[in-house]
Length: 314
Ligand code: NDP
Image 1 (cartoon, protein in one colour):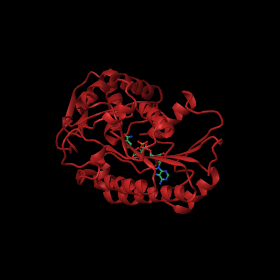
Image 2 (tube, helix red, strand yellow; image 1 turned 90 degrees about the vertical axis):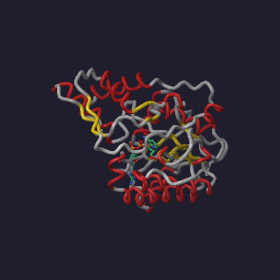
Image 3 (cartoon, protein in one colour; image 1 turned 180 degrees about the vertical axis):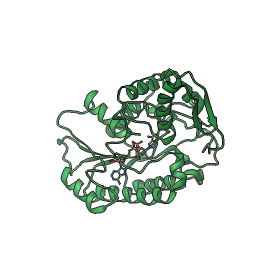
Image 4 (cartoon, protein in one colour; image 1 turned 60 degrees about the vertical axis):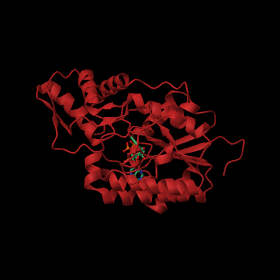
């Protein structure tokens, strides 16, 4: 355990993922690491956190005082619908192993990540932090959502903090979050050259709030250092920023200079039509935080994607 004078040793599980890479960028490139601190970004290659022995071994190796727990089996809507049981079982194990091992080793603070999909399907809007346990989530991601519910129980019992962010369309150097968006980005690029229509699954009418992943990362660092409640906190842009998915698709098309036709395949599921989240609590803490505008984030992401096509994870 940590003495007062000792700098933090932070272990980031899921450090090779979208959010983890963004945090690594903020830590290494934006001065997010204070003197003497040790930051470790884990991938599943170093430890499979579904396995308790591997989890314990990696904690033994790095002896973290603080944990940012991001590791999860994450899919998009269609994968969640297909493999609900796997999402539930693997993620339950990962959370249990990470939280129990943190507890055993006396980790000072664990910051863990929920998701906007855990809020009740039938609800009033905007959604806020008090509504997490008010009803069942949308059935499209039943398994994934429920593992997050269990995480809130474990975290609250152990007095650790958890944050929930809204869908974060990858707008950064790393990769896109869901199969839907990865697919859009890659195919838009290819079709730009071929001149054929771009097919988008779903009607494009569901509404979402999009947050730039580096903004998420900056907020995570603030939560780690400053946020002392154990109650959840929604990390999101404001309600007024919610827009139909088709508007985001159009921004991608514009950023990639795609001039062809965009066709929405309405035979494919839309998922939840909206999940408008309130960021009023976050705003009470950080009234002046500036979110990166969506079109700017999309432009940066698309430029990165074009320049790093061969190494981009799809
Ligand atoms: P990614 O899918 O980009 O990354 C997942 C990370 O988890 C990777 O580092 C992956 O390692 C690791 N991982 C997966 N399985 C295991 C395992 N068995 N053992 C160890 N590590 C494992 O996810 P995101 O960065 O997008 O999400 C991070 C967190 O944020 C998750 O908890 C997610 O639920 C939550 N979240 C994300 C949102 C988003 O829009 N991105 C929205 C809401 C919540 P490897 O690279 O080796 O496979």
